[in-house]
Amino acid sequence: LSRVWRCCQRENGAAFMALPLLSCGEISDAAAVTVEESGSVAGQVLLLGGCTDDQGGMSTVHLVDLATGVCTPQPNLLHARGMFAAARMPDGCLVCAAGIDDNCEKLSSAEILEPPAQGATDAAWTQRELPALSVERYGCSGCVLSDGRFVVLGGMNNSSQMLSSCETLAVGHSKHWEHLPPMHDARIDFACAAVAGCIIVVGGYGLKSAEVFDEVLDRWLRLPRDLLFDDDDDKLCNMRSVPL
Image 1 (cartoon, helix red, strand yellow):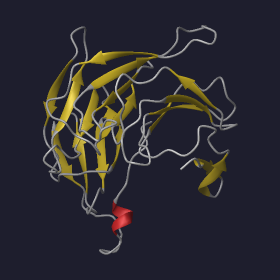
Image 2 (cartoon, rainbow, N blue to C red):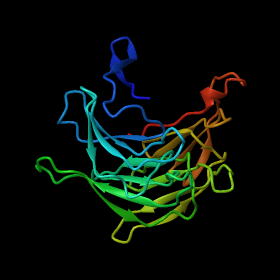
Image 3 (cartoon, rainbow, N blue to C red):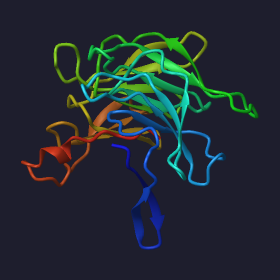
């Protein structure tokens, strides 16, 4: 799709507002990550990767002005990716991990995108390779812990098995992946968010359950209520999150 919607807070509650269509055309299974918003009255996002009509991943990167829908091309990702995890780090860099490539092969690779130097004019984002995850996965989700670590959660592996495992990119000079405790439920295409020292995951293909990872306790806890969807409403349980 090329249509963009923005959730805005109003006096009578939150509401979605339609924004201009993307000038780069229709795209699916991409990651949209918020970036420095001073260059646009409605904010900017970096639109990363995505899938083509034949389902293969793409390497394209666009800086999107949400006020106009204008998509400015940036240097491509190091690897074509669709259905992958991405999030903005505390220092403004973006991390992308896993997904499927342009041949629909599952990926374990990861890369980091670094923003232009502050004050630079017409400069582009730059990419460099990161260590690979321990397992290929796609349909996974990603977020950032309170200590600045990037986390990749769930997805599906090369054997078409849904995953409950989670990996985190350790901070420091020698970046490397470490394992977090696995989720209670294996999940693909689910929503996740990092809030107040916790990770909340909800739904996914065929799932209505929700759970939370407590960073202090270092464990997952089931939330007491499932999503209020009918059992036969499959499409409502298939939820891709938007990294913030």
